[in-house]
Length: 589
Image 1: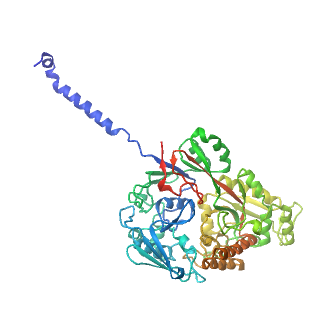
Image 2: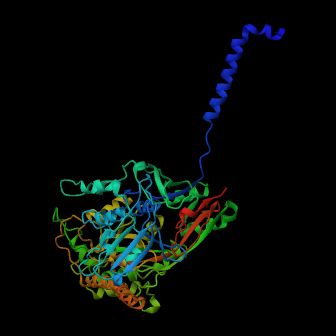
Image 3: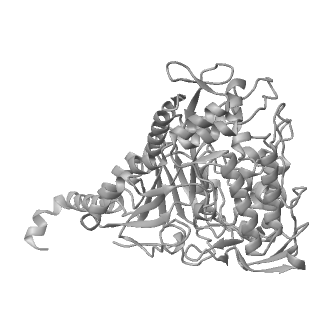
């Protein structure tokens, strides 16, 4: 044995122990080293979703979440606007359009690995969308004919499902993009009911749910929800497109304002930003330096408007009117609504709020639609003319006192409350301009922005609001998709809201002759397949809408988005979104 080794022989156990300790610490250090997370797409939303139940979702934040989670039988190509298969691989239109048979793609699965079959399609339509005890706006869009009948749906075999319609219904195929939901998870929630007969489904998958247990069929599934902080999505391992989506994780940051979204984008904490007009020049200057691109997506596919509450109904519980009867008489006076329309300087809104990036909006149908009627084609418009507004009011029996304050025929000062959702700078700025415009014709407006959930509650539940500035999503699809807004029985007929599903009739509610005529036109539009004849039907609808002004349309701004250059495969199309082909997008370095 070498002398040196013999000298250290008594220390051998200690040396070996130190060597083992060093090796253990090295291995532990390797094990605890942070693993680089996969690339993730960073987006933002200025409000929390109200539900993860995509059948009853009626707010934009919930609908946005649903877009990540679910697919329908068919979809629209974002570049061309044409119908394409999605969960269905093919479809047949038979018996003069009264029987449609869809064939599903073989091998479809839910995110939990269970098979997706025709049973899920039959369940989704028959027991959810067509269930009168489930408050779904989709049901309004699928009502057929004068009786408002719903299609019959039945499973033919594991891959085929048949819809039978009581009469030909031209918009049917374009509605088939609605979410298909899992029967094996949700059927028990429909059969189980509360004491009043309300299905437990209506409270299933609310915002208090364990989101990791929510089953999806789309490109993503939910991984995490932290209220007022973020929603995280991860790639659905059983998505129908093998290997897609390419982006493994999407995070939707919930921010308190659009200003916060802008700051996050500029600090590279967001990959995509929907631009306000005031952001455009700033970001356009920084494109090359900060490695992103600003996209002009054309006129926004939405309607931006001022709306008065014309309901003359009363609460079935308290018998109290939803609207002060004095104010209700003003709001139900079409001359009053026209005077307000003439008094609003929409060009000033375009210049001051939208920085010139927009145009006056007149029609309830988007300019991209083949059914759009322009002012050049005879649509009534209300160009800024405060003097004409005053003349209309005086002719209708209103008068002015010595302080130039408008009084009605009974001497009541004309004063009402105008609301919008707090935090939306463009709507808040628009409200202030309208407040000043109406002051010029003697109307005092109390402008009170409200937290969004409170605003929605007033619209859909209490109905105790007077005037609101809002916007509604539009799109280039069939005008019938707006039937839940325009038909008098629609769940979003907010300016004269009827009873919601399961609610008692509203005493005192009056449906006007022009509302009934719009009901008739929407039915006629679904019966007609000839494009020219359908255009004539929806032209009359647009004339009525502009003459009666249930919505005083304001501005059609440009739709602008900024996207980081690392976001690859973006394709700009007719749908006004850079995420329409989300599963095909990639994140570069």
